[in-house]
Length: 255
Image 1 (spheres, helix red, strand yellow):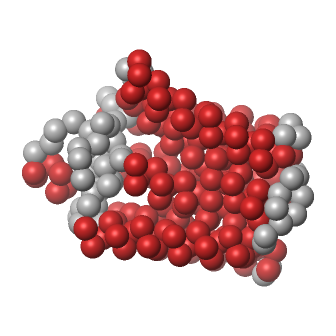
Image 2 (image 1 turned 30 degrees about the vertical axis):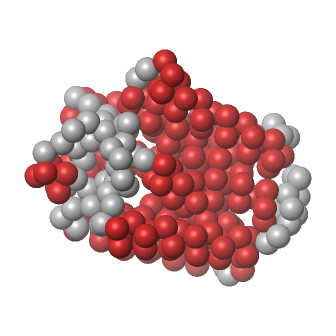
């Protein structure tokens, strides 16, 4: 596959040590699928079994997936994307618990998670002098990376619910809104040379509400949703993710 526009040339040793995939079209496809799958899977589990049991299972799955990822010595497609999927599932649960159980309004939780993400970025940059993903190797930088990923999922979940429910946009209008916000920095980087790191992380944050809005629009019977069912949507998205990750694994592609 052609070199990503997001990547700088790296030595063979550096490439072998890196713990995250290159940022190409396939990266964004699987990322969007994982965010949508996390939303539909979380909602399906919470409503089909005891919510507290669902949260515990999500937490156990997240810990297990992150343990595998942190123990791996290099990027392995299925290990990395399994961790992302579990962050998506548990991140959805965390944001929903904040609203449903604790009664925190979506607007407030969105602001709180935005502050949390900003703090993570600040500490990461202060410690490492960069927020670049080009050299995320095992160790402290990888821990910062996954802390950032988890914060983006919680923020994105709350933001998506805020636009759909609090601002009464519904799922489809929210989908359109976040699709525009997702594409904007990517296009601005290509056309106007917008800062690479800002472009990446802004688009990354937007993948969460974009994917979640799509999953809710397809699965939910309210707020303009098609009502196909969370379980069915989760299953279809899981199959797609497995297919893409198998492709990446077989090709040994660091996408």
